[in-house]
Image 1 (tube, rainbow, N blue to C red):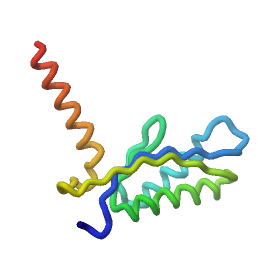
Image 2 (image 1 turned 90 degrees about the vertical axis):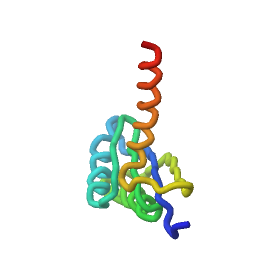
Image 3 (image 1 turned 30 degrees about the horizontal axis):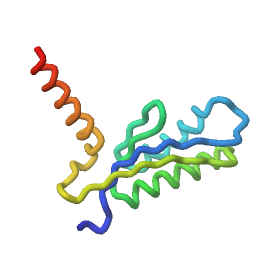
Image 4 (image 1 turned 180 degrees about the horizontal axis):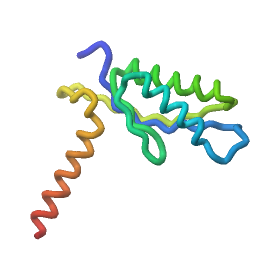
Length: 115
């Protein structure tokens, strides 16, 4: 088993106590941190998918917290889901997209069978 598991994470970082209704500036700062991390990531409406070695994924989320605090947010809460697997090699940088593609293939097969 590898010493650092490959992790596919989904996290939602929530700045608290900013006095603003929009958190877009804070989330943009987190996205800048992720760009510098070199990890594969994709923002969506309620969070970000992030993947890479577990220690680097954890560090990137930590660095997002630090950056958002530096922007003035007195508190930050984050919900995180992390998946790992060791039964087969995960395509580096393609873990989340691979999962989505697999489900889309099954649905396409169902549609073709129904036609």
